[in-house]
Image 1 (cartoon, rainbow, N blue to C red):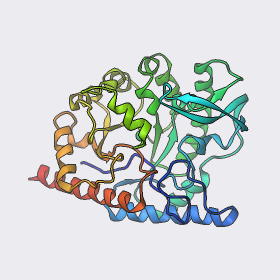
Image 2 (cartoon, protein in one colour):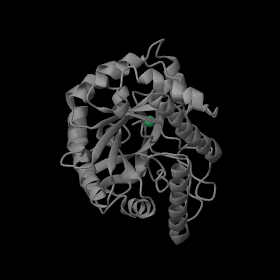
Image 3 (cartoon, rainbow, N blue to C red):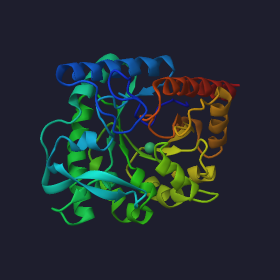
Length: 340
Ligand code: ZN
């Protein structure tokens, strides 16, 4: 019970990419860069294991960004003529590539890093992919002309890669769908359908991560505008509870999410965010155990997986490593109290 995991990403060491930023430029190129990505993956696997994380990831050390790491291996996208687009309902502007033709995978997307991670850990291994709705919300389109058609096209490519990752020995495939917390009506009308299509036919565990974003200013400002109670989950959890997805990863620590909303996920594994990624203040084991105890009022212990609120990519390596330790120690404390 209370198996620990993380949302997915971890910071890149400074010899791999510029620290403390999203979209960090790589430090090297060619074979040296490939070797640095491999070494960073091994380093984070070891640190996760040492911290007592039960379900580990590659830390997304081989991709510059959680969305564009996937897009880079797809034909039908123009990366040379990016356009500015408001994303997440205009929360921020980004320069995004453009879909200009039928989408297809050029090749495997994540075979190398999945293989490296699988070869170097015996623990349950999770791999993250962007979800179809979030992809659609992070790219411009002049070909499909319809969000739903574009989402379904992405879902088919995600499914192709997810099945290959399963064959590589990945145990859990998680789709990251922060857009679910922004377009709640569309989740019910097509978002969940696209997500299930991405996960279709997988025999491994499937998960979806839905959060309030990395700890960057645009997200912190947005959270400040959401009022005393954040109720986005209230609308989407019943849809997820009725879906084929096994696990839901969500944000709790320092969030104004009413914990009773977790009760809407009955029958699902719930990855409860007990580590805040928007502050460098490292949680104490007592604080971590406290959030777990609060969540246990709504989620049974065998369904509750202590986790981070979101990815830790933009943080410093030392803070992220300390937060992994806090996650492990706090969960150990919670287990001890449950056992007693
Ligand atoms: Zn997130």
